[in-house]
Length: 251
Ligand SMILES: NC(=O)c1ccc[n+]([C@@H]2O[C@H](COP(=O)([O-])OP(=O)(O)OC[C@H]3O[C@@H](n4cnc5c(N)ncnc54)[C@H](OP(=O)(O)O)[C@@H]3O)[C@@H](O)[C@H]2O)c1
Image 1 (cartoon, protein in one colour):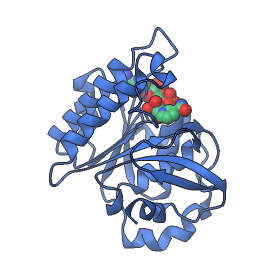
Image 2 (cartoon, protein in one colour):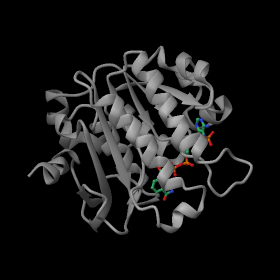
Image 3 (cartoon, rainbow, N blue to C red):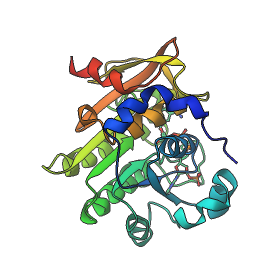
């Protein structure tokens, strides 16, 4: 089972949180993935309600404990009816789904990172979801990138992104698309983060826990809305909050 974040985790950002937070339920697609687990922890620590869309109920119960049994919908992005069932509970979506590109038995990126994401975004909008947050990847605009050897995964992610931008840039809706560098493990808020736009960052890594935290605060920070940005970690440097990072992009 996952460990909760330390009690002091958001101590220093409480002032910001009391000013503004997200009211409503967030559907986490891919909640049992390595980033998804951190997204759930971050939502819990921000006291934001959530519902989980997962492929395996057993894996979810193992990770999050029996108390989340009422917060689960089992299904995959390949099945519209399962997506619809999950969205009944949601006011916003955070999608951390990613196909397994190295396993030939898994559906290809065209089915998950492109078509699955497009399907989720479209059905979510039809269900009145106003905010869609997508975890994508650095280098999606670079067709020659070596990772594209694996089922054109980066180009497929870009197509998924494009649909999210198209659907959620309409007035009254918002999107945030995070393009992290290589994902690594570790606790959040231990590094300065570097944000940029335009897919200019060549390389870099970032902790999944920081990506998760940025995804969650994007729900309620207006500067994060209708934004696509890259993020990697910089120097080790404990952070009290990641909220101010969006100012890098808007300065
Ligand atoms: N690895 C990297 O260095 C890196 C770098 C940049 C961006 N990214 C992207 O960041 C995101 C999160 O990465 P991660 O390492 O946390 O991935 P992960 O651990 O592999 O998790 C992926 C999640 O997607 C779920 N999933 C896969 N196919 C699905 C489907 N058809 N329907 C519904 N859910 C499905 C998986 O379900 P199960 O739990 O049942 O397996 C899992 O929960 C992914 O989009 C990934 O491509 C990764």
